[in-house]
Image 1: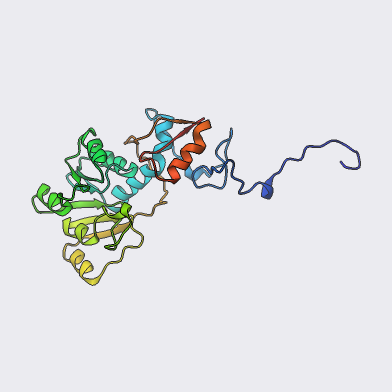
Image 2: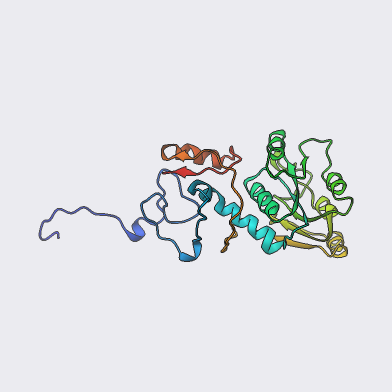
Length: 264
């Protein structure tokens, strides 16, 4: 083309554009941009959207919906009549886990990390059997659970992290200790944890052994095929594209409790 002296417009392709992030936003955790008319995606990462589920709700529920389904069905073997304790029930994952458990006839207890979270959980429908406000120093998580279950303990515990040391950052001080979780767990119970640094001492293992209880780890990035059709995510109003940068900064600073969905 240089020899013919034709005017050309060079368009970068391939390795020239791999890894480029526009305006500091990288959609989800993929290397390919999602802000375009068509995207390339593996067929195994797709699932049919239920007709009654809006696109906004579907976009906000994928990650936490799969995690809740994996935790309760695959790991904990949830069944009708079980009692479930969801720690930090007002989190996006907690809300979907509560709804999924209700659908399957499970009695749900949930902990709240603030008075606002407690009010939110108390207003959920179907209602939670008991909301435990761990933000209040007068409330004891273990005593509340044993009281609600007649001293038998809960069948499933789904945590949002575990307090590992006395000196923890402010954000982790309301998390339960591993000893508390083991104590409130019933015979044959299942503990599903997201704490990747959890360390069990011999006395902890013995307590789990005597209860014939099991411990499972829920990876933060678990993805798998799922045909779940229940549950609605708790979302903020859809964010227009021109506010995407500000919204992403709020998410990175953990200033929002609900999921944000960018609407094109």
